[in-house]
Image (cartoon, rainbow, N blue to C red):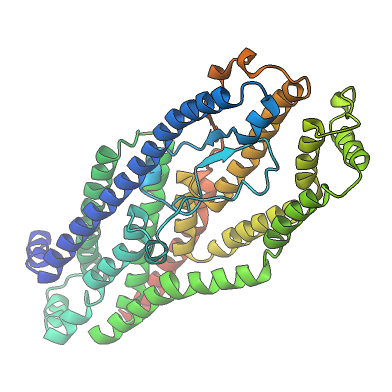
Length: 447
């Protein structure tokens, strides 16, 4: 009987259509990921070359005034993307992965991003995570919505009962064929992504695989509950499509709006204005007051004394430093609210598998908002290291030609965060097991 059910399954035009759609869109999603990774890699290679040329050019122009030279020099800090990011692009298409910073006030530089077509951002990326989260459930619904109702409507269900077959066993056999089909397509696409995107067989790859498989099982559990209620094919299709619309489309938008309104980030605007205002006010402020604050921040530079007359790079860079210091409260508040947004989103997502899978895949691929905030914090450390390196050179007015500029190459952010796959998988495992438990109760009642 199993062979007959398999033949019957593959004779369906729905199966061929689903297979074709998934393969075509899967190829497009992998191509999108490859283009994304290539674009980012090219940007990194260009950054390495451009920083070298930039330093050489500026040193040649301003070798007698290192203070003026460092006013122009930019230094790059790079967040390298792992190949797995081609599967879950997340927010890394919006947030810059390269920070080009001067040793001037930092807060006005950290949030510069690449120029991106806004229409493309609005549409979003057809990456592999989109395929899993949005399209695989639709295919599962299309394959399963009439699993039982079609037999009843055609009158063949009575023949199954008369043959003495267990109704539940028969349904589970049909369901297992569809599950095997979806798994085969999934592994074909995942293997293609692994090869084409050069993804290593590391923990992150297996984490993505596990969370995706759990999501597929979840939608089969949802479909089974609806099937066992023994409604008509039309009713089943409407219920399942409504479930997909609510879980995958409506709730994420609702949750996003709720979190955005709950933790509105007004500090992003006030921080930018304040760091600019505080910097510009220093032109009309007593220099001693500025220097006192600077010496308080950097007591190791107290032995550098401000000259009485004329322009001083010591005072100028102290003034730049104050722009960051005076806006620190707003910066910390903004960072705190963003982290609260991220945390609240993760808490709510535990109850909604599509949200949980999306956040988990972005976290595994290190393309989430939290990862970007960690990168910005690391940029602040990188910027501080540059200041501590160059301030003595500026204040001592060393000749630029005596500095070994070849050692100043783009530095890389090392993200050592480890993903706890069990913690991320547990909510969807619990929900899926609850759905299968409910299916068992419904089956005992209706059969």
